[in-house]
View 1 (cartoon, rainbow, N blue to C red):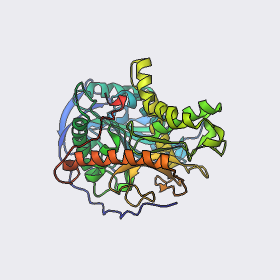
View 2: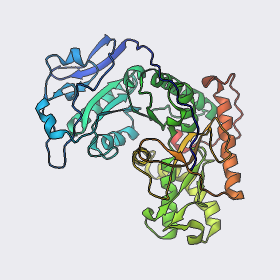
View 3: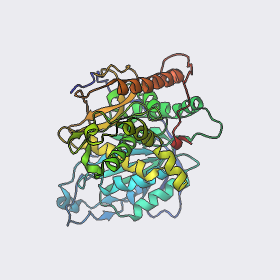
Length: 438
């Protein structure tokens, strides 16, 4: 195994700016708007605690003046917890702060309840959710927060909502960047790269200024590989290794197709890798994948199917789903985000690995440096990862990897103005848009 050698930047936080935020405070009959300068939050005075399967959650009691103490919180989450309950819940871990952008969208609508219920970080991990929306989506964001209130999740300690990333990203340890503009009719991929690139450049600057120094960032909004590159280039105080582009849904789809062809359940498929870009140039790797511990090519002897139909099915699965259902794959995307997080906070099973789009500097595969490229990774469960070294290549796989690498290099040239690379020049070889970008 090889680890990309990256120098850990010095974390220097900038001052915050005042801005408008919205909130619902317990006992307040309606939503109010006010201007304030947010204070840095600390958890030294908060209860970091948990209950077992039979214990009761701490009892909430209202503070004397929740508006002055926590003007950015939402509803019931403006309450503090009865300190007497701490003795019952000492087994809980320290509270973690998780930011989600595009929090009023369909993907988030599935994901947030997984995060709040303990399905992702574990049944003893209390969570604070910090939800980023836009002015247009703010009412919907309030509705999401109300549903989280009504779900009575014991692990969900705080919910904050806002439209300013410099406030929402304060002290976050995980940032799940889902929100991005869809590709409209007649819009070229180059234009989509620029429009969404500006969003992720601003969010990178906000993370750099106010997030935890070791924040883990998963970029979902498309085109996610290059958006992740833009984000990390605008956050020099955060290790580049901490940024991921989501390719886990593609991996899950590849495992599903291999299982169907082999006539086995998907848990028998391991070592599946998606190489490269989250686009139609992505490379589902059947050469290194295994079924019941055996190389896929020994189990599935129809090698023409592997080289042609298998790859095509994985690349176009999202489009087929949209035609069948009339909407994009929000639920399975949310599941894949949860899977991606769990792969980083849970030790990788011996001999297996998972796919993630990561920064290529120091990679052992000969892939061009300075791009975000999906590769096989392993984790010890500490949020970090190592690049898998023990993989094999053949001419077929290398040819496909070279094509997706060329596309990502072209995308990088197209956003040079957003990553400190000078004047942008777009020479994208072809339009490889995925259906979910529409």
